[in-house]
Amino acid sequence: MAMVFSPLTTSGCSRYCNLGLSWKSSSLFVELGFLSNGSKGVSAKPAKLNASKVFRACASSSSSDPLLVKAARRERVSRPPAWMMRQAGRYMAVYRKLAEKHPSFRERSETTDLIVEISLQPWEAFHPDGVIIFSDILTPLPAFGVQFDIEDVRGPVIQSPIRSEEGLKSLHSIDLEKLQFVGDSLRILRKEVGEQAAILGFVGAPWTIATYIVEGGTTRTYTKIKDMCHTAPHVLRALLSHLSKAIAEYIVYQVESGAHCIQIFDSWGGQLPPHMWDCWSKPYIDEIVGIIKRKCPQTPLVLYINGNGGLLERMKTTGVDVIGLDWTVDMADGRRRLGTDIGIQGNVDPATLFCPLPALTDEIKRVVKSAGTSGHILNLGHGVLVGTPEEAVAHFFDVAKSFDFDKVEDHVSEADKVVA
Image (cartoon, rainbow, N blue to C red; front, side, top):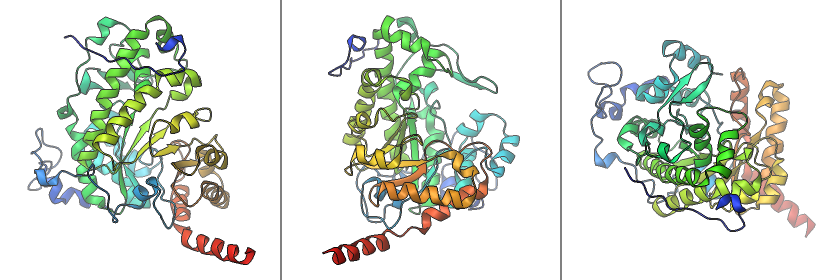
């Protein structure tokens, strides 16, 4: 099958660039065909969703939008909305208990009733302002021709790494029917949570996804893909171009299925020197953002890179609405460098949740004060660590909900009058 890829160029590039479980009785869950007349589990062929149930989140904004969405658009909010990366996972006892019954990660992340149950676990426990779907950045790979397994010790394993023109032949357009469990899960989550919190979808950025596809799985050195930047740049560009188109379609699908907001994880973009990120990651993120801004202009996009201290200004030029900071960036410095015309997310050190609760409170207050009262989404600077006390997670959200920006602004206003 012949494939056509449009090369991307960037000026300045070097030569290298050329709630309990009440959801189970939900009428929507039954309508989708997952539960009927007391049956358990997921049917092999869920019923098609009525067209009236498709969310038109691409179309318009509303005054009833969740707090997180308003903050992402830099609208006035009374406090910082808060959620956590990896907020559904192994630190929760209820998750560990479920994982004992369903030991396969792919089963847990590709079965609608399990996805919904796991996604709602932190919502029921802590009521964060964002409920992120339990999934993985590699989940869509089989839908466009890349098969993978997740092994207990090695983690993700790509069965046939792509490092040549021959390997590119296995790729095809994304088949969204193979990701129906994602769409169905988002619809159920949207119905269960309503507008009380934002439903968050997410994707991996093309460079980050490509590291797995080229390296054959997880790596600490990225030697194979970085070598391709020099020895087979045309193959790598073709792969990245294909990924950008597939990921853009996947984002639109998530939004139309009910996601209020999408986070793009360029998790391993920070492994590139800035000039190389300009060439091998940024152009493909730019392409995705451009497509989403045309098709879903009201959907906020968040961009997160682990180790992004040297990339903040570059990240801003992608056109996303919010930049996620990791915990190694000082929030005040990040806000100064990015300005106030873009949203900012983060960035409490995940390890702080192991500290005494008063210390955690002080750190949250420092971060919020440094970020300012407009356009800030409170989060960690990385995912929740395994072993994090659930009490600390609950405290994190309690502190977030204790802020009152109206009182802060009133105080500032009165102070200004005194000075005048």
